[in-house]
Length: 551
Image (tube, rainbow, N blue to C red; front, side):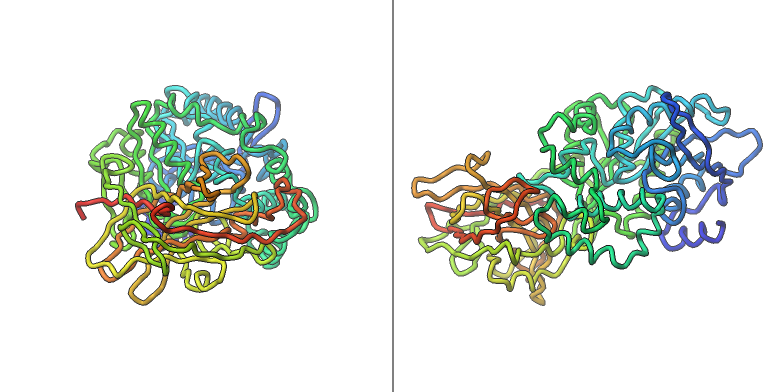
């Protein structure tokens, strides 16, 4: 264990331990009010006799052994904190049945009450963890009482319902992959490493993404229905069924200091920033750090651990001198440096860049021109290449092969004569026409490097059907379609170009639109869609960039 600790500290550049090589008590039994017993591992520093340390509670559905557990627990255990690393209900040997996100409020509060009764507890509690481990923090943060001194939810959201949906569709790659993973955990006894060693799993997933009807795709991966995936298809985002997994309405009531860390390519980014906004509107001042990372990117572990240790040092141990002056720290890609701001989003000038004929992109309104056209074939769906997902198809990618496809339109600026720094939410407004009433449009902002390499920055999708919200029909029958491209932070350098892609999908990140109007999960019919994209004075398709000064 000691060698593992030292290796992790070296590789991930964790802070030098102040209490190295903690003692570990395995399988601590923690009873819940309904009689179910949850198991936890208890890490405690080997310090002076009689010294009581603050406690960090981490609750996880992913087991308590191996590298992942060490990554989350060791930075705290080796720097003066007890760590209670608990397996959530129905996972990692804990009793009961795992049900997606529904037991974390009650079990989390019961665990905190148990901690308060332990002789090693000194009255100072913090919570940490990423993704699902961050949601469990939000589920109790407004209810835990005065002993909870700070939380550090990373790459996560308070609402474990809405993040799964985007633009009227849902995130297929993330959800089918995660749901079947959790079903597989139940079969293998919750051994996280077992799943990582299954080389055939990705092949099964790639096949399942294309299976029709989609409601049977989970069976192609694990041979049985996966409950979380089936519930997703059976209950839409507005269904009351999901209220128990949504704590967004309680964010405003959270009094404990909150430190949020995220990534520009993380699947939770948009929703995490909604939580930041809710806190700010309630008069709170959370801290926010966003790096150039996708979900679970190894390079994020060290910076996030250091950020959280500083946060707990300030709000648990009282040493506020470690806090940075400005609460918002953002990694600006392109410039490859961190910038600090007083708030999110930072002040910006909104610049409209208009699509032009012959694949141009400029600040000037486009001249009269004919629309560009392409055909979308759901039997050969436009593939996902990078982006805010969870799985094989996430992160920063070279998009040139994607942009060479006939079903992807590309609009590029002239070579920039000076740097252009874009930080904040990006929006597009497209004037389109489709041969079908049911179709998708997908837009993506890219930076084109001097070499010609096109790298994705942010994107958005919208699923169109009769009566789609926010879509306006023009006199000539075309549609004005608003798209929210997710936030980004990038310096377009002199000599580079700004590019907007437009297509009708990013599969399997999002399920392909069959064009038939059949409900998601029930689709069996695939229809070709002939698409038109306008760029003329009456139909000025555009992308709006938040340009920030003070580079």
